[in-house]
Length: 420
Image (tube, rainbow, N blue to C red; front, side):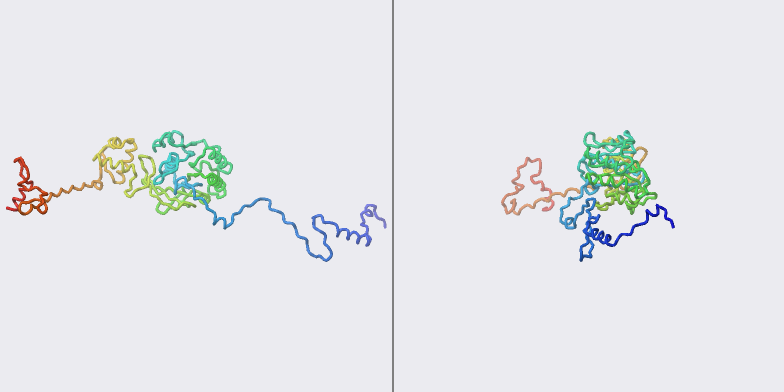
């Protein structure tokens, strides 16, 4: 039988037993490739495997530190109302959200009042992405913005390309602008102008809003983001600001606070409801002030400050034309006319042609003055002596000097009738 040469060369050689024993002894004494020590005689245990350190640093805080550390109080742009962080202001289209945001911007920029709150003065960055400069200027003048008394920078329609789409990169760009400008309040009107994607998709909404919220908390600024309500929207009788926001509920999950502005068409008033992490739930009844173009808290009589001013002017004038009322209070005639129309619609005034007058319910007749009580004359002392105990404190009629043209005693006629 013949074998090919290549097959003969590949036949394994049988190792002699002595050689095999010597090789195994050497291998048992040599270190292993993995760095493990060789097994020694009498030991059947596996050497421990070294544990590697984690590739990243992971910070934690203990429960004891959380409980014992003095934490600072929450920061506010408007005390008790607008916290630092991300706040959503949502409402139906054309309900008055932009007017409310502009009113708030003026209060912060000038250090004025926002309803019952005195607001610390701070610089404002306002993205008015649905307004042209001229319309914005008209609205500011209507609200009585004082020139030179506050710092507020505006970005109008078409000026926010650097921040679109809203994501982590654009949020960091905004952070650089806020830090450089030292802004305390950032208003974005509206969310849909900066967002690109599906607002019903939670992952996309979170990717857009989470970086914005992180920047706001990190820099200690308040970001007010205007948004819209779902259709159909809840009524203002029992509003839920979180569920009413358009799109995914992820918006409510990311935001630190949510406001909802509810208004029925054809009605002057509105409801502003809010909730938040550090914000106590609130529900305010508001009334639109057509004279100052602002939202005001409704008082017990249901009138705003300017409406009460107009009503009192008509009350003082008796009845008056729009021009007479405007001249009396020093306000613009067109704005006064809108307030007069509102007062007529709610039954506080009546209109006769161009004349405005009070209704019967406003005509409260004044209380007639009480006539003064005539003085009680003193009783003359016995024996013709005057005064207490005859001490002469009051002059007797015989001792009173007179010129003969008047009675000696002013009560002589009375005494004559009493004493006969």
